[in-house]
Length: 354
Image (cartoon, rainbow, N blue to C red):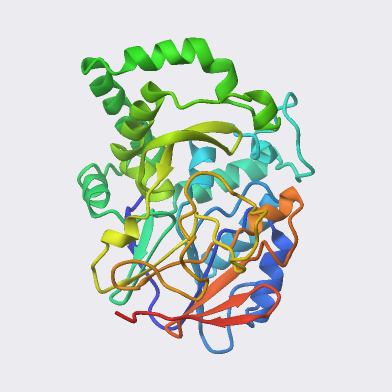
């Protein structure tokens, strides 16, 4: 695997997190005038920010379409945290389409066959963590120079990204153990372990008096920030002041708006963070933890130089019953810095006004 690969030159369309929503993907590609193989009459190319899978009805179809376009030389894709979960054999409450555990619900998802699983895994293992060219960078969650340097120094041609993840995790565990920080974590796990994960249950009913566990907050922050694969695929995370439910378990760290400290000239497009096209919506698809976009309109770029844009517009929330008007699939057209949604609506953005 490569940590950072060279991105296509020329005009691009950078597509946000798809999360198994094959209809949204096909609608968006049609609005952007792409053929099924990813070719375009104006020789534009596609870039995918990762999180192709989980939550939606047909992750297999999404991966097959993206994979075919990549193989045709018309698209590139970076690794997201949901693809990483597959490579790590990490079973989550929304990825049973891949693992096919009979003890877990399918949630209406198409289940991958054994041969499909093998092909999908091979495709994921070959994805880079980031793409870069002179004017633009693409990463799923966080462009983190220190993590990129660590990964490049640790490069091992015989390892895939899951091997690197495990190696950094093992080193962190050894450090936490030698520092004596696993003791309180273990005590909390013994007392509250059955409450931390609620999976498909109502988290309020599951743990009505949920509380922050400081030992978990310390350990979870270390496990995240000392692992460059985790940082690039799921972002900077720091100990939270209170716990909150997300993704089937209670969380003890908060996501951090790392872009406020990004000062490079190259623009960055990311996914991962569940942005909304309508800021007035109160019943948000993912109203958990700190809202990183509470003061940022959907037409605004982020950060110190206004050159970081999140193109994840929460299409994964459709699987939870949220409407197509609230949860949308989008692409940033580059270099135009214009956003196109899967229903054809276009949004002009304010890029680089600093």
